[in-house]
Every structure is written in structure tokens, then in C-alpha cells.
Image 1 (cartoon, rainbow, N blue to C red):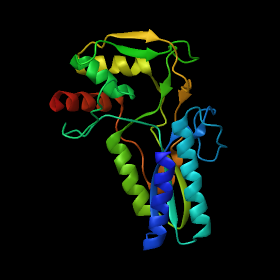
Image 2 (tube, rainbow, N blue to C red; image 1 turned 90 degrees about the vertical axis):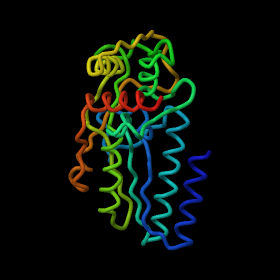
Image 3 (cartoon, one colour; image 1 turned 60 degrees about the vertical axis):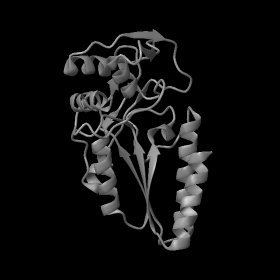
Image 4 (cartoon, rainbow, N blue to C red; image 1 turned 180 degrees about the vertical axis):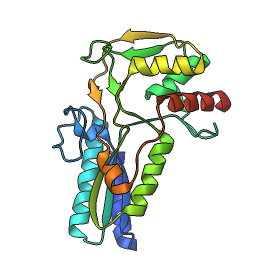
Length: 233
């Protein structure tokens, strides 16, 4: 509700005050349980969770706004899984309670704030049974926004912002342990409703049209996430 209503209010405000460029933070969840890699041209399947549905509705609101207002330019950026932090260690993700996102969950367990990481399901048809996602460094994501703003032209443009590489939950945990020299205790629990087995991008369109490509790998992501966690508390 907040996502859709806020998008509608912002779109109306843009039209009222003559703001004709709109870059929207969308999500890979709009693809639903599609075949990987996800490509911008594929038909969207029903979202597997309410968050994905709100993003899909918001995209449609902006598309309709652009259709009825020819000067209105929209860039829909479909994020995959942003993790990491600024390399300075000063800007990062610090949720309260048990995090919904994997990376801060890992760092809080490593820090001793939480006892164990819960991994939701190890019976998916993936390399090790755990869910596979396309993790992208938050700084790469920020640079994708800059590229989208600089290259925005009239009409609606859709871009995947991801690395194009899938990493399983266990692979991410082991990478964190290896890079930072810290063990992360975990337990396997049941699948979480709405989670899909695999999700990773074909990000070639963003590279071709925006000149943007993710530069940072998993090692940089887990290093920077831990660096922020250490500095934050």
C-alpha cells in the first residue's frame, strides 16, 4: 500500500510541478517465478509475495503516466539483491531486531548480536539446496542510478541492475567467513513462503544502453558489509 500510494502521489506531484524525469526503484521480484536469467523483455509472472506485487503495480502506474504525458520520462530500475556498504565503513544497513535481509543478518550473527543465522530451506533445486540470488554491491547500484539519470530520454525504459551471477545463501556465508576470518553459526529451517529457488539478472541491456556494469564482486560486498558492522557499534 505504501509503495503504490507513494508512487502515485509522487507521479502526480511531478506532473503538477513540471518534473518530467522519474527514476524508480523497482525490484526483480516483479518477474515472479520466471526462468533465469531474468530479461527485461520477458512477460511478468504473478509476484510470489506482496512486496513484488506492489512494485509491479507501481511500475504500471508510471508506465500509464508516461503514456498519457509524452514529455514524462521514466526509468524503471529492477534491483536484484543489494548488499555491502560504502567502503569507508560510514554508510551501511543497520536494521533493528532480526533483519529481513541476509547480509545484515550475517553481520549481526558474526558480531554476536544474534546467536545463529537461520537459513530458510536447503531443498531447492540449486547447487547446494539453498536459494540462489544475484547480489549486487550497493555502490554499484548507486552508480547505476547516476547512469540512468544521465541517459534518461523520453518514454519508459526498463533496466535490470544486477551482476548476472547467482550466489547461493551458503556460498555467501562461506565467502563472508573466508574473507573476514569469522565463523557464522547457522541452522537450516523450513522454506519461507514466497521465496523462489533462483533469481539472477541478464544485465546486458544496462551495459549496452547506459554504459553501466557492476564492478564489485562478492568478496568486496562481504568485506564492506563487515567493515560497516564493526564501525557502527
